[in-house]
Image (cartoon, rainbow over all chains, first blue to last red; front, side):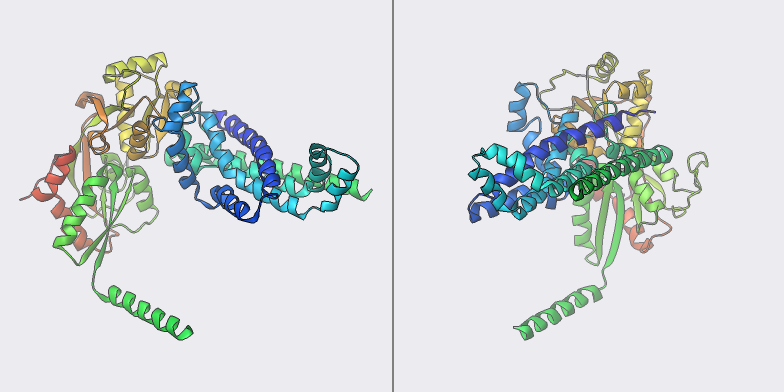
Length: 222
Length: 271
């Protein structure tokens, strides 16, 4: 039993989630400060991967990072190849998961009480301190919801991943591409097994998130 | 404003009804992905000669198409890139291949239409310097190359498996070593080679021609057998006569010229 797809999927999802977490909250934070027109345009551009079909995203990624394309060739000089490698999967998953984090973070930031930030400023705290110690904790629920969504999306990414990194057993196979390949080659048992594994992971993640939320609520009450 | 909208909508409805009333036969053809360019050309010619026929194609790997037919997809004519997929739908075929006892092929309509060749292609530049199947086999043994092939459900993938076996290579071991990447149909493999994402790919000479890829070697009969494309009208066809008419047209010289222009060889030619 080849467990590589499990390890690969988790690795890709985890790294993408971390990348998207930081990128998402920083973009959301700075976007909320921009003038209306620019904010609108940026919003559309950054939310686009969520609305586009994954295959369209995959196609765009290939157009940009393909080995024969300008950006792809430039990166090849440094030995970085996003096509047919597992970290290409991180790129694909990050692109499609980013809007989820961005939108939820934007919503959370705009809903937070600005007076909290102002009070901290009057107390002489730096902007960075205010961001990490006042704003983020205040938006905790929204941010964590965004994280869960982003992780789930990254774990379940198929279309863009399949187009960018293909299916190389032992190198780029993820759970989603493996299930498709096993189904196509009439390995019903194998496909079913991976479906079960994926459901188990998802159940564990969701249960953990629920438990953490409950603990937080209890902490706030007491 | 509201009145204008209502009038426009009624007109649109009437026009679409009128279009539907005009008696066009919607012929559904499932064909192997490697026939995309040729059949599209043939459709234009056929529909010009038969304005009452409207052909809809579904191009994909023959294995995928066979599964779709099995699951009840609407289809009048099926052209497969390999005998195996057609046999799996034919009750008259060997029960060892047609394990599910499927009976989709209309009796007497099945013929062998075309012959194709399995070839080895490389991306522009050929960085790994692969010039033949022999060299490819050596590099695979050394774990030095990434080869794109169809998966075991795709006819060209099945031919590739035969070629690997011919060279005494263990497919599983190569896969584990990360030397093989699988595509779900021949066009996916072609695209991967064209994009330069892999070092080499095994596709048909017709796909290589249509995509403008460099062919470095062709597989012989010993390596993978003959590549024959069977075609048949399906028992579940809604327009069996139209399907048979189109099948007959595919065997004419006119159609064969189109097929030959990309590298197919005719097996069945009618006057």
